[in-house]
Amino acid sequence: MFTHLLIATDGSELSHSALKGGLTLAKALQARVTVYCAVIQYLPTTEFVVESPQEIMTQLEGLADQHLAEAQTLANSLGVTIETRKSVEFSAYEGIIECARTRECDLILMASHGRRGLTGLILGSETQKVLTHTKIPVLVFR
Image (cartoon, rainbow, N blue to C red; front, side, top):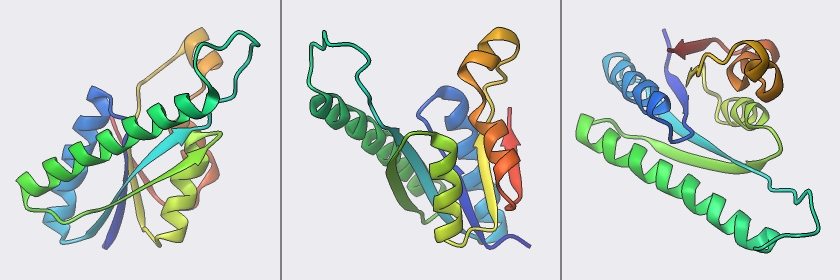
C-alpha cells in the first residue's frame, strides 16, 4: 500500500494530533516517514521594523527546528524512525508538495484547521491548496 509518508507539521495542537496519527499509521504499515515543516519567508511590509528580517527569519527557523525536534521525540516514543526536513517558502503548500515529490513520498498527511467563511477566504487553506495542486494522495486529519 503506502511505503513512504510525508507528515506536514506547523507545531499547532491539531498538527500534533495529525503527526501522532500519521506516525501510528506508518508503524502499522511499516512505512518510511518524512516529517516536514515549512518556514514561511518573512517579507517586511513597513519601514518601521523593530527587528531585522534576518533576525526574524532566524527565529522562524528556530521554531521550525523546535517543531521537528518535538516530532522526533514523539516518533522515538512510538518506536518509529523518521527523517525531518524544512525549507523556506513563500507558501507552505508549495514546500509540502515539493518535499513529498523530491522525497518520493506516496502519501501526504496533514491537519486541516477547518477555516471557513471570511477567515478561510483571507487566510486561505494550505490543506486545500495541497489537495488542489498535488497528484499524491492526501490524508487530512481534523
